[in-house]
Length: 114
Image (cartoon, rainbow, N blue to C red; front, side, top):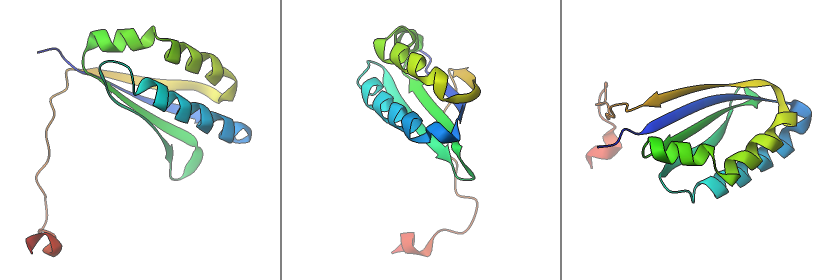
């Protein structure tokens, strides 16, 4: 079974260009969601700083990840992104992570018992 690829990026936007950056992120989400092997491709603003973002992308396998890195959508995003950043982004890439769903650690929600 091919190993999935999970990439998590911290993006540091410019406050004065917030609307432009968010529009770029939304357009890129829509474009990339159509790519083969894309499981998740989402941007989220941090609650305590609206110009800091987390970008989470998951790909079915290494081939899908590499194809995305060579795609028009990725190239267009990278070119438009440069002038919208306060500093370079920080990315971590994880390959083949085992997935699990944790068990609840406390008492069950009484609404779920009905």
